[in-house]
Length: 383
Image (tube, rainbow, N blue to C red; front, side, top):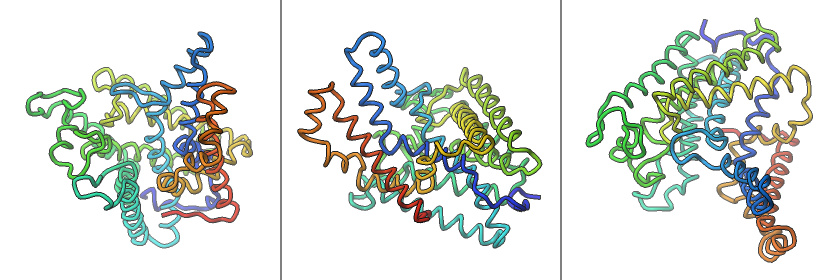
C-alpha cells in the first residue's frame, strides 16, 4: 500500500507541534532576526562578556559566507522540511476523501499558485525581462512541494527512500565528477563549481548573487530531498502502530542519525547552503527532525500546549504572512510609530541600537496580532 492510501481512522485532529514548528520558523523571518541583530548591536562596548554574547548572536543571525552552518542557515531548509511533513497529513486526507486523481490536481494547482506568488514576491513584471527573477524562495518551495508530493502519491516508503538516495547521491556525483570548464572536477568553491556554472549559463533572468543563485537550477535537486526527508518524518508521525512517545523518540533518533551522516559526509562534500550540498541537506534535516521530535513530545505528548500559541497562530498562515511582509513590511509599518526622533531618543537614552530593536520587536508584535486575528476567526489563507 502506498503511504497516501493509508487509513485515516481517528487521525482527523491537527498535530499542534507541526503548526507550532512552522510558526517558530516564520517568526524569525518576520522580524525576530532583525531584533536579535539589533540586540547584538546594543551589547557592543558593554564589557567582554556582553561583547562575546553580542558577537555570537550576530554571527548566528547571519548566513555563513560560504562553507559552514549557522542558525540563520537553518531557517529555509526547516520550512521545506515542515512542508514535507505537511504533505503527508494533507494529501493522505485528500486521497481518502476525494481520490488520488483529485489530489494530483490539487498539487498542480498549488504548485502553480505558489510559483506565481514567488514571481510577484520578487517584483513580478515591474522590471524589464533581464531583471525578472524566475527562481527564488517561494519558487523553490513550490518546486519541492510539487515533486515531493508527486513522489509521495505514487511511491511506497521504499520508493521514497530510493528517490532520496538518488537525489542526494546523484547530486554528489554530478558536483564531484563532472568537470567544470576552466576549473575541473571536484571543486565546491564559490563561482568555481558545477551548480554555479550551470546557473551562470543556463538560468535565465536575474541571478540573486549576480553570477550565481542560491535557489538555482541544479541545487533544486537536493532541496527536493530536504522535502522528502520531511515526508519520511511525516510518515513516521502518521504511523498508527507507534505510540506518541515512540514517535517523538524516533524523530529524535532520525535527527541524530542524519546529523552524524551529514557531518561525516561534510569531510568530503562540505556543508554549503548556497549550493545546497547533500551534507547540508542531512545536517539541516537532522536538526529539523530533532526539533520536531522535541516539540511533539512537549506539546502533543506532555500536553504543554499553551506556550506555543503565538507560533500556532503564525504557522496557520505562514505563507500569507511571509508574502504580506514583503509587500508591506511589518518593521517599516512599526517604524511609523517608533521611528525617526523616537528611535533617536531611544538610542540616546538607552544605548545605540535600541530604536532599531524596538521597531523590529513591534513589527513582530503586529505580525502576531494579525495572525491571531486571522486564527481566531478561522481565516486560513492557504494556497
